[in-house]
Image 1 (cartoon, rainbow, N blue to C red):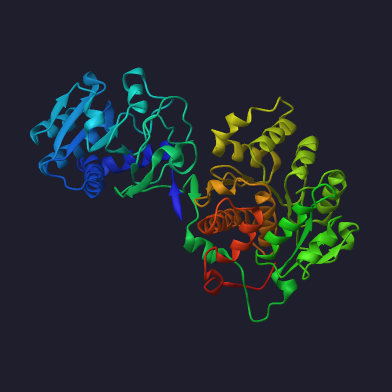
Image 2 (cartoon, one colour):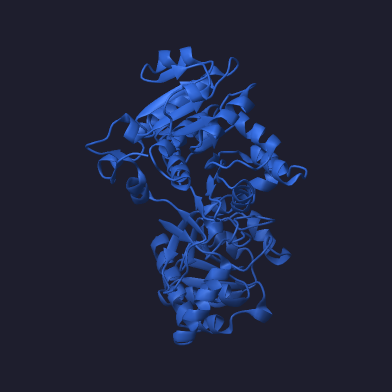
Length: 485
């Protein structure tokens, strides 16, 4: 698991550490870790040209001390001071003592083999100030290494409110910062390296699953399992206009770990011709038989309101997607069963409007504040929310939040969300909690997209569904068996 902490949490942990450590020790740990990453990036340190962009405060100090360490190894280090009157005095003295020099020549930026971005630290808000904004668009030949967070990126939210310096590598200290894991900030961070500096941190504000976590959570049938113990997922999707949505949702569900899939809807003929193992009907949901979770909405069209009522009345977990979300936004909050909502930002805007009675915010605004948007929706609707986009965010009603680390831009294709909905519903039926089911589904769906794109591009939603069996190979052989839902 990757753990990310807010600026407030980090500041408190740093204060506690500085109270028990010798003066300057925390900064020295950060500088050594930063310099070590820089050494690995440079072809050779001796004779290389390094530019330190030093702002005020500790972030500039970290960069200056790291520059001093590189200068001692023979690098030609220059420091461009963005706030000379507020520069970290100890860091500047260390740099000069090691042979580094101060420069006012901005052309050094383009000529350097490596640039250390120590302009603004984790406390920065808004875009770069005018004195530094020009670097954001300036050509350069060397790598940019951000100190803790790229300057201009909000460390807590990932928001980029103005000019920001795009990094090739970000070296963060003590813990990941949420803004490094979620777009748009993640797209500015490049490759992120974590350097431990001995902080005693509280529970993380944001987490991200890794392969071992997904292996642990994935359901595996035990020796006494049957299809009902493994879980049965119901799919109420598709319409005369969109029968393919039903086929794609069922395709995702079949690979999600449940023991059986029941389909109810007008596309029953198309579904059973493609997947003869699916149990189909075209009547009421209550007559479909035993079901442990429902997926409602993909390609649902007219009549989705009645279908949603039936799924909510069944009493088990309900995943609401696509047309189901439009219907839910019209009604507003109030469901008393476990809900999982899977909106994109446009649907999220409608859901927010439905819950607050206010005009829907711009989708672009929500895309730049993904963590806050997902958490707000989860709170308003008392639901687990999977907010789709370039970074998928999962939020629980209790405030927990996960960022999905997998995916590819090729997943932006018609029907991809239908596959995700079916996969997630199957994991719900297999017994995972809504928060875990949404997190694991996003991870596997993103990984399947990557696998599919390795073989050919562009990919289709059906390619993604077929690649789900390749996602996390061998995971089902190592996870803890389950006795069902």
